[in-house]
Length: 233
Image 1 (cartoon, rainbow, N blue to C red):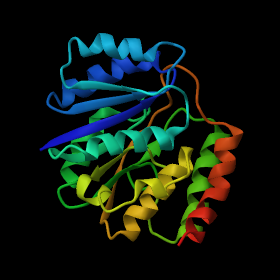
Image 2: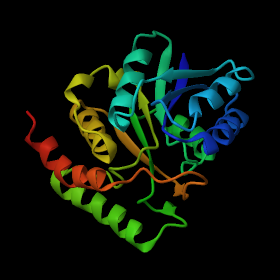
Image 3: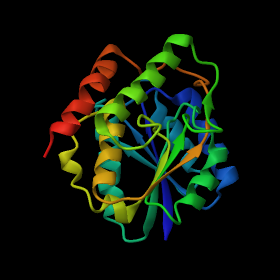
Image 4: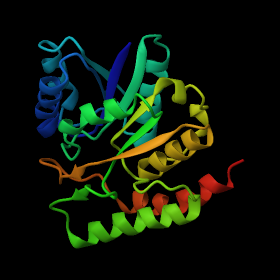
């Protein structure tokens, strides 16, 4: 059985080479699937160049940028067709999620269907963030916990390991949120399906290159999203 890391990209050419190389140094046998949304900076071309040296690296090219949620769902649907995938790991392409935590996530996944790389438990944290981003993220996670009611500390975490057995219990077409709200809805549906969860402390680092994808629309969806999730049957 194989474990697969899914990495959505949009204009991450500056980071993707370094990230892929770091991952394969730590986990030489892991499989990586990059999902690129037609990045103008030719991120896909950089991945194709890397594929010449890394046979476990794959690329899914999408015609346009349709949001984080749709990129992940497209990758999940493809991977769930395979019978030899055991776990799917999601992580950002900007090197804010250090590959050094991957072995711990996989270790914990032996006993839990969802393992979250968490900034908001003991031992976790954030470095090199402006005060407004710390307030936005910390306050946002507290807000989501109050609405959704589960004891997850880091609802907006994008660094997580999910068992295929747990994902197969979900109707992925039911998920219609994107951005950080997608990450919230995915966790919520997994928990409702009876998935056991654990959080592993990580230090979240600021992106090394490129520009942040955060926008007013993403923040707005993060405010409305938890209520939409609660109101769904």
